[in-house]
Image 1 (cartoon, rainbow, N blue to C red):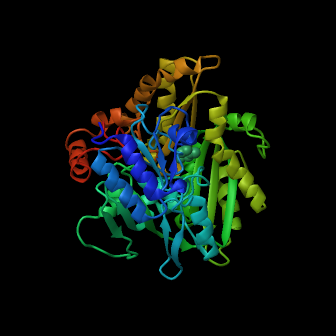
Image 2: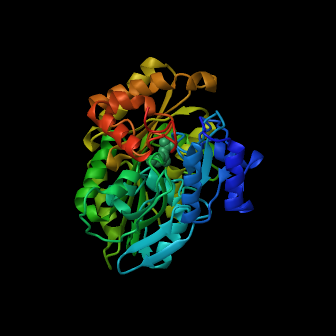
Image 3: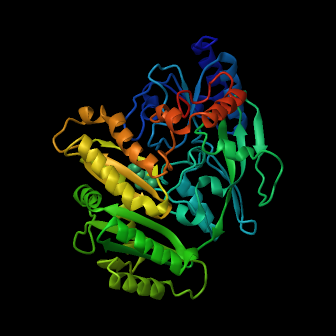
Length: 472
Ligand code: MLT
Ligand code: ZN
């Protein structure tokens, strides 16, 4: 409950931020609903500060008035992590106007960038400086630096470069009381007490607002090869990963798994999507890349695939011959979420298990879901090289979408039981958001959740930062 009347606060904020800095009425609609359309929130205003000082002023005013703030990047959360509640009393804080690259240093291999820049624009800026910003996700054209860090996004290159948190050297954060912490250091070694930046990465905006970051860059690859493979089973896809990885771990840029049904949805719903060979029960997408001159990646990939074919791990394969073909093969993977959305309602389980247990995960979770709901359509896909599978489920044909979604907890629990038995996690890269706080006591209860609550209480004692997210 706010301490001061909201209209007075909004009046002060509008005077401070100017006309470009506040959206109200119909202009707030796109900020109030999540990408999956699971949540339809309401907000009296979307605040759009132009710099860190304005973010600090906004948080100070909101803290004084006791009004909650929901930080929002590109609003591409899969778990409703950036939407305001239905009550209509939380202000959305959009960082979109803070999108400048402050500095790129090709010798330090770092980029200092503001939180509201899209990840794609950060990638392009790195490329122009002859470097690579090594994290890639389907939503990178819309997702922003701040959101990617706040949610510790993973994506397609985790297998080589780690998650978002592995790319962060420094952060600038505005705390809930309006203090600014300038931790924009670009040091590779800095062993000076608690690692505060890692507290804010993955906190999903519940501890403060990331306004800028120093990100690690790597040398830009000069050779790159992408292959799509038809494989007979999940076990074969894993065997192929092991083979490719053993051959040259430093060159494996991505290794993705897709199922026959998921690919079927892409072919059915995504314009101009075509397979380069006959439909298969399972697929693997391999990307190799290296900055090494004359590395001979093409020949290496061909010989590894040949050996894999002889071993029965691969039934058919196509290596892209051009940049356009590479993009077309990747599109078959990247459009999985969109295709699933167009096919109907889906329940997502972004789970991880030890890499060796992925075949067991897919087999056992499929069986558990089918036993729970005959006709349900499992669509597992994703980052098999990290043990992170999107064990998504499409509604049974003809079922009412709302009736299907009403079963989401039962379905997620059935998958969760399998994941737990395999020593996995219920959220590998999408985070907790608003969808999964209820799972926290069961999965992270006891000392772990207690510690998280104490950290939250110490930094945001009044619970004004992104309420209802992460912690139950
Ligand atoms: C992806 O990797 O494409 C997304 O994280 C997956 C999803 O839709 O669950
Ligand atoms: Zn993913």
